[in-house]
Length: 337
Image 1 (tube, rainbow, N blue to C red):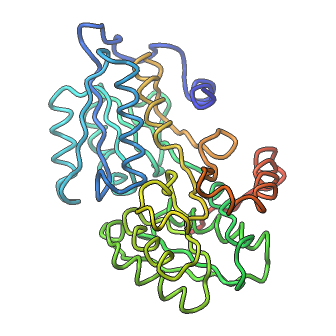
Image 2: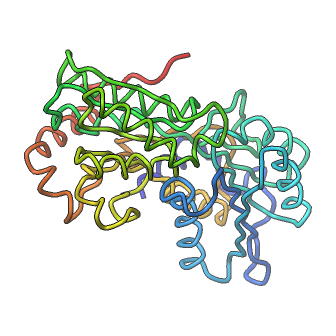
């Protein structure tokens, strides 16, 4: 896969260098996936990560022993991580922004265990270390949302869960993409909360979306975890278009809401989780940084049998823009603090 080749070419310093010996068939590699809030059932980020884990187990079978953990709150993160490492876990994959402060501390205490933080940057990582930061160019995927191409009012909306870097990058790319199509477009932006509950508040998501619709928005993109279910409900209720995130969310909402989902900005979290596990099995996972975007095949827009008519008139334009991102003719701005 392109993702594996990218990591091998950039981050690997030779098979087994600085590594413990590979696990034998009699001793499966212990892999733990530590989820972000609200855990499984979010219809996006966490479910995608878990899909990558289960696919790895299906493909590698008895070479793996897997587990999934969702800390009950932020205060229990360190406790749950230490339980895993004390249980001789070989690879810990932590999902999201809320592990950025604690994971480096735990990794420093347990240098023989590999740790990967997915979807948040970390400072001063070394290739020879045991900690890897894997992030996505979410702004590139969001640039392809197509909202401005479908809006009739010239007003569109964005609903974020919490103002963390990944979500702000989605917003930055969505804004830039819309203005690339229509420089005069009006964009409303709202966030559900300042804490982790912002990713699990469907009622708040619906209220924010209804407020934007009242102001004239006729397409709304969410990057808000389970809060986005409320955005979809509002869109269907008011018969406007919504855009999902992380996975093709057309198939995680009630059937009556599906026709109002223009597309979803797919983020290959499942691919990332799977390939990190594959590299660790081969003793080729090194520390440092991995950043993936449209060119790597992990950021794109969703197409399916339900939304194909909605996309039909704008697909050629979106595909042309996507090609320009890949060849470097368009550089999508990321969020800057």
